[in-house]
Length: 250
Length: 250
Image 1: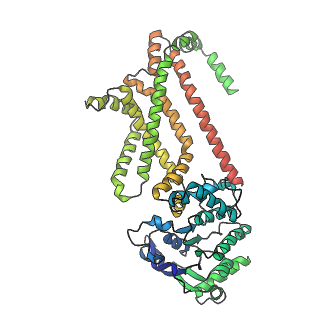
Image 2 (image 1 turned 180 degrees about the vertical axis):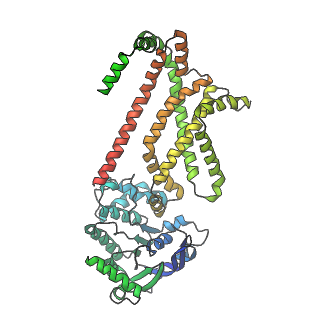
Image 3 (image 1 turned 180 degrees about the horizontal axis):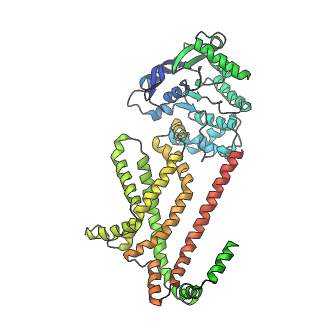
């Protein structure tokens, strides 16, 4: 990974009250690479992504986007968020807006794109991800997989420098997981830089350039996916993977 | 069956003849129709103007109370005190305070018109209630919604304008309409300050004819406005329930 880092985290620390939820995270995601964050619920994966998107303030450390610190006090978070795309576990589509209005809201209001241009771009992306003909539907008329694909399209509309994916398949029925993973594979093929919190080990193994195992808000092990999954060094990683394997068998 | 029973009981009651003569005289009903519409028009105008003020003021108070910034504490405190006092004092007493007390201050900028002063009292009282309805609506919107709005690059104000408020207002339309129904009737209270609106005219007629039928006639006028509103609220509740059930079944 010699390419320059799009995202870099140095010593990122976050507390909820007295409780430390992130303890000095160091991480770098290079251009076009995908880093997967794995770990049990409550290990800090989602918080980390929310901190990177500046939805949460960090208590210590620095986060850099294209080499520029974005967590300095006084930095306006709005323009930073416009350069990142965050996709939530529970989709978080706007229920009062149609699919196309969900997709273009950020582009029109935040990026200042002309309405017609945004519509054209939105239609093109929806079409590309198999959602043609659903533009006028409201989110509650779509399946979970379709909603998550709309959420990904919504995040892509702002042409983000990096995509932050927060457990994007864990709210989905197993048969719908594939359609979302297919899109992410496609985006990886396009060279999209991604930071992915996931429970989907097969996906992390196949698409991630680096896998970080988080436990108690700290990265306890990191490495190439084949090394982490076949020969984990840290006992906590071994236990986590064994539990996961067991639950998959059941 | 029950209605029939009640109707029979009334018709067979010992005082039915007197009641029919004093409250349900067709002769006096027709006589009232010449003067009541003028008074009712005063009510309708007052209702429409007060309602518009209540919607704006109620929403403004609700927004002020939901502002998170610590620096705005004094503004929030003023809003809280206003709402507490206005909700805590009976509307009738507020009308006396506004109608007679404020007038007695003798400031030239305070209008001498009792209709305006009474309207201001009702507007303040109802704004306090309606602000609580709006606040409940705003708080009912899942926090993931503003988070998603910020994540697509909207500012906090834009998130409120395009994502939170449309959902909040949609959620509180039935309780808001209920408050409107209350206001249509409470407008009659302003008559204690002197303005000749429908309740006051009915009272004058009743005193003049020594017959209470004008009150019944005034009630019919109110029902013309309130019954359709009540039906609309019921219809919206029903639709809301249907929508929820449809979602559960999906």
